[in-house]
Length: 89
Image 1 (cartoon, rainbow, N blue to C red):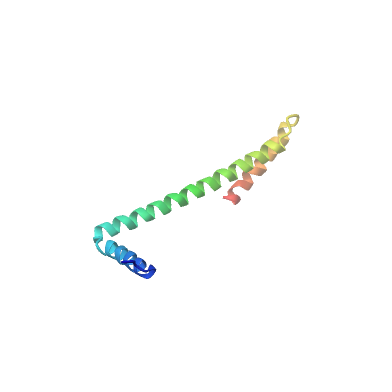
Image 2: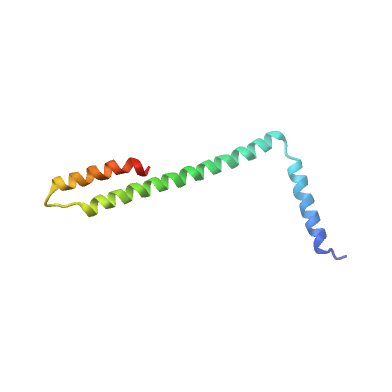
């Protein structure tokens, strides 16, 4: 006996429904908690990576704008970039 394509979808969705219906409240809490933990971990990772890229860009600007013959100008540039940093965060 050959099954048509709609019966496969019906059996599959019925199986998924039966699986999720068999979970207890404790198991649902665990699944939801794990999902939120993964989401928060990814958000933290991407925010830290963005912050590190900003710091690297500011450091590259400082290195590119330094003048070895005039250290006071370098200090002024560093002060400008440090004043600019909190606005970028």
